[in-house]
Image (tube, rainbow, N blue to C red):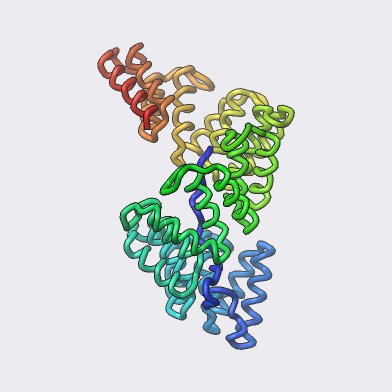
Length: 388
């Protein structure tokens, strides 16, 4: 739950040097301009299928901004099915006409392997082209590549330099990432005060992650006392900006009665908001609420359905919870062998609770023959995980 979200590439980049990555629709025909602006207005109203039609018309008039936004819509399935091939094609067309935002989006697709094999070197090349064309998002992404060693060696100093350059251009995600480096001591001494300052700057520049991370600092007491009410305030700001982790964390505070009166139905409602948008942690939490009867009546069938959705999204905690239900016969007869398989899958995803459960199954001979040696190996894995 408590991790910094990976920064998203922006639909329209922020110009560093007055480049062509913003709205330059005035450079095109009156017809193309009218189509583009109509599409943008519809997009902002979330009328995506209609926006798509107008962007197509604007693209036919040769507008790279419209081409880039078409790529974005195909990439995210807005007004159409997700289609990475078409997204790539539109980004390439826009990039060929000088759209730095499209160049940055191509870098993202190669970096994430969307519709194509992951290729960090090609991603870096596109980010550099976009940065040279004045796109601050791309500059921030180059910083991310250096921070995480994607396509280059890890270099925190270079990462900070790129983040600061992007931050000077007003990029909120770069400000957030600078805050993260100060909070975690990557290339600099840990400085919670500086971290909070940068997170606040990020939030002021519309970074929902910046608002989220301030909330997490208050929740954890980093740089001061634990303050759940302030955590709630900042989680609400991040949620208002669409941050799914912020929504989930509001649910968590209501669920546990931290800083607010305990309210199971309210917790459930917030978890569902995030779950409906595909946030796997919230999906797992929905399963927990139905399994334990928190904010809703106990319903093992629904709990299992939510857990399996989260597990399908790679959530290790959900896999462990499925194992627990199989082991204890919640909603179905006990099935130790199936429980063990789910525990192992969860352990493979790094869940230490699942590792303990695998060890227990071998110690007790549940779903497998007793084996003290294998159990000891799993206990050792738990200990090793604790030191990482």
